[in-house]
Image (cartoon, rainbow over all chains, first blue to last red; front, side, top):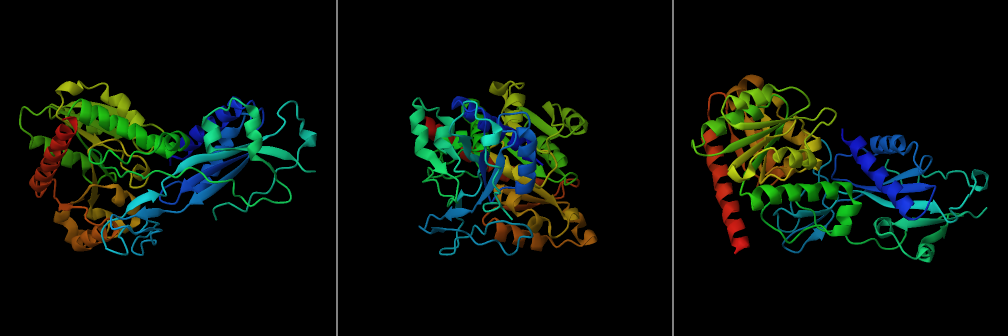
Length: 142
Length: 286
């Protein structure tokens, strides 16, 4: 699978973003992945955590949000396509519910670093003043 | 303890801010709890299918491409397309599908049907080995072999490096044979003019339903080994029906590459697509 190479690139971006903002620590990074990709959220999280090791974001909380698929048809219809009921794994039903022609995906193929969180005070902010990492189960993909 | 922190949104991630005070706009208190809404993110641009050379207006925005790893992959594929198709007038056809489905033999059959003066290159992706490359070289075409090693698919960066090895100015056609894989290539367009997905009857009657998203990225589906469909209990009409349902309007060709059945029709269709793209580019250039 390609999760490791994607994770490496996401981590590179998080680290360089932290560096460009003068942060020596990253508390959390949030990644968005589209539902119409073959990226496994659990594998991606594992790979990101491995790739974070030894960086300024070593113990960052990794949050992964799944983005739904949206499609638009030339007839003017737009919305979230149904899951295709014939397919044995997830695929959007790209047939337009209004006119039956093929609708184009507008979103659902993302794999992007949405945000990072850095401490407000980046200078010598020692660990004993930190809150423990927050449980981040509210946004996880099941 | 009310621990303050800054959250950097997408735009800030890629545009270093000069004035650090602007970061405080995103300062938040994480306690007691936050809603998870951080303002509005930029709209996501429309996503392209794997077909290149038609609509040039629906590019993803620069910020999306920088922020999104897969959008960056798609941009790299567009760059490959630009070099091959626009700069060098090379018609590139990618073949994707399972190991053992007949991709190599189909490409060989297409090469055999090409006029003597057609300059053909083949880019072969395999996890390891030179077996396919050796077969193509026997046809007298120029071959570049990409051993992906750890990766289970070709990606447009590997392709862009490999095409540098060809004399593109003299090439008419480039066949790209992807690694045998029915999953990952769905996320990785390569920049070819067309993607041909090869499924074979030996993969079972549910092969299309099992790999719907790869089918949706294909421009053409080939059902190969139709000569043994009955023997292996695969209903080719069912495969056709599944393709039409999951990826409407995608043309389906039935072939028996080993015995050379159905290959002419595929060749004719691809040549027609070549002409279509060629005319499109010349119109665009005028």
